[in-house]
Image (tube, rainbow, N blue to C red; front, side, top):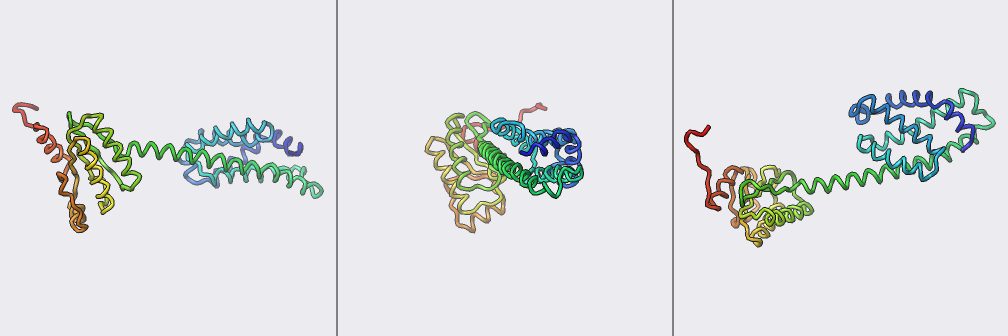
Length: 277
């Protein structure tokens, strides 16, 4: 980079930051300013400016390392990519206009300085976009794995009785997760009866029923009984209209009734004790 630009940025760093912060706050949406305190926003913004400047002074390896750490931070804060790229553009504009006001940019050297700016900013923008995208994709992938692990838990409620509460839609990928969790959980908890609770499943169509029936068949193969609970009236009507055969299931409309039936299947029951509070 031209030493004229570098010297101007280093000599006017604080003024550039203050102008950048004001311009950024005016244009930022609530996703950026409302989710963090002013102190965090200012601190992260200063890191951003320092990162831009370090691209001038640091080696490429050092800048890439700093950029990777910063990308992870802003992804966690929820800063959108558009805000980051706009911030780079705003920084370049503030520096160039400041150099114009200071008489550093003249008619004679304007094209040269514009070229120097473009040669510096464009590769940096590309690198920032690539690093942000990579970090975002990695974060989303990890979150997806975590959600999948939590989307179909098998919960022991009594000895030999476990419950799998299902919430949300069930697609082929999630059905595989349900099947895997069911089989592993039945063996791990030595379940005799498994209750699949579909209270939180908004729609039960032919595909969803097919996945549930497959899961129940797999549970029976490992020596446990499967019960379907949480069948709401509208779900029952849909099942009948679609001609879905659930005769191989014991079905109950609530989890409470399902647990009571499961206790009976394991030769137990809940009784009221006189005098108990």
